[in-house]
Length: 456
Image 1 (cartoon, helix red, strand yellow):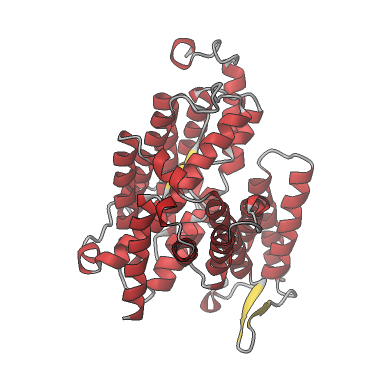
Image 2 (cartoon, rainbow, N blue to C red):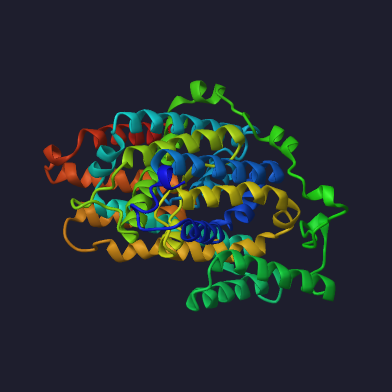
């Protein structure tokens, strides 16, 4: 391990790396509860999604450990899974029986595009050509979108005939427990509890079990209210159910890609766009926290790190889960001293072991995972502090439109599209055509075609 991971060179030890890996796993393991809930709502087999999420996270993180030797873990990304489930499957393609298969196909295509771009070192160029203000606006909008989904899943935000949205019934156990869960996670974060989000989910779930045993939370299957008590009949229930992957793995639908090329391209681009900045931002942020950047502020072996992310995305699509990306929660492990791929390898092993825990994760209800969505949304919304609301109106209005269009049109893709279109049009009006990067013209043309198809 010393020779492979260069522990002494990076000023660390096996014990430190293993503890850091455990810390990273605890910080991001909430995805094992959240992802089956979200993609299950889109019509996928929840147990299959759980297995795919755990297995793809392990594969991608192992590749990061062995190829790039960085303490960065990967898993299905928040925001990207929301776009997958709520924008595509339940929104734009709500009437299409193959919606989630089409979405998986788009992720597969995105992954291969990333592999090509990573091989030719083009991803950094793409990142640099997008206006900085627009990047922060998009991240902020995704945070609002995820928060809104969390509020809906818990029933805190409810549909209303006159105002469209209103406060839900806070007397119901689902709403009350979700609100308590937000406070619990907030308190744990305040006191620096490791894995606060995961522990918050588990504590809220336990409170739900108590509520069911006490008769407050009443099971009504016909109304969609299911028991939150794990249905465990024997030890065999804890064995990984690889058969469930048969309902999610390699379930692609390439026909839509050819019959509706413009719409499919927009879906792919939305995945591509969000994952692009999420990955690069995470890599730079985590590396900076661990003092891993060189004297010029660049990340050594960044190409290998980006390639690990791209391969992880393809693996996730093949197994049957939303886009796999680098997790900012890796910074928790770095803060504990993690500096090499041994940290990532430890996290990956824990994801493999987690496959034995489906009876636990599978029983966690949406009102227990909703607080995690709300808190993660809060973290993503901190990017609004970097948005400049003064200066070039193209930058200002472009970012603002991206922020508001995501939650209010219930679509990450719409936010990106209208944000980019606003920025481009104002740039053109101001006569700054020469300042626009060629890549932005390609993006602009793609979105114009999308608008035309929507109007037609």
